[in-house]
Image 1 (cartoon, rainbow, N blue to C red):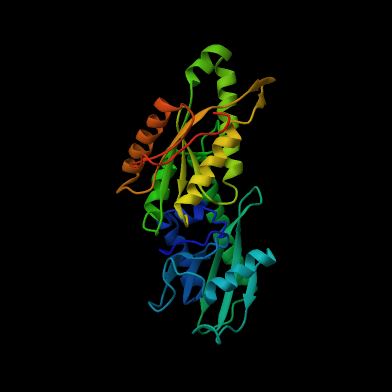
Image 2: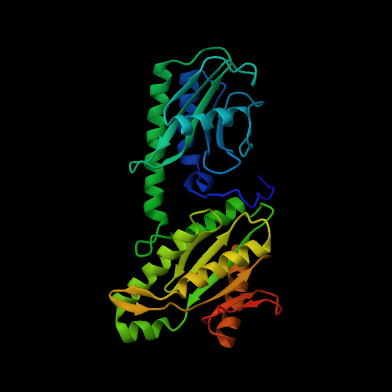
Length: 316
């Protein structure tokens, strides 16, 4: 997973990728014994690499955490395509195993978040085994739902800043990582002029815009504090791709929109950092670049450590 992703990967980050499975491990340890399985693993079926996210194994030769596309995860991908449980009697031609079973992890709102799968070397899985795996999948879905409640900002429906720390811990070792810091211009004046209800509506509009523009998986938006936001790029191909995404954000925000029946245009300044040793350092550097832009042009994009790149919207 250290390799950069292709430009058209459409990478999507979700809770399965950054979850700490330690609290769930005892259940799957027990499940491995009940099934008499060689291994039980959780796989992501949304991203382009379909990695094994965590594995409980009775055999050290089983696939490791973070394994990219391989026979087990090819089979787990079938589960999301079939939208149902999958039992395959004979996979000996692909693995040192005789049987595969997998069930989807389905959240209460119907979203599918990967799969729980198992492989066995000496027995064929049955419907009873499928029942046990379903119970584990429902428990994992409940855990994800609880983390959703904790991770999301209620006003903007974006991730909270704490999620950025979790995301950094799990993805900063990839070949590319960037953080953009976005700050709305004159937000205090907006609150003083139009009232806090209107100010909250502006924040909701910004949140909805960031969420819509990140739907292709290019970046992960977070609300940092007040009228400050982060756009985290955990796997980009070229710096130009990041800058184009940020230009798109500013262009969308600078488009006039009706907020509480009032015609309004959002103005924002963005700073971006492409290299640092910690998330704190990324944010500090991006914040500094953002203030440089705010002091010069009020609205636009500045790159940390570079005076040669500045982008100003045509309407800015």
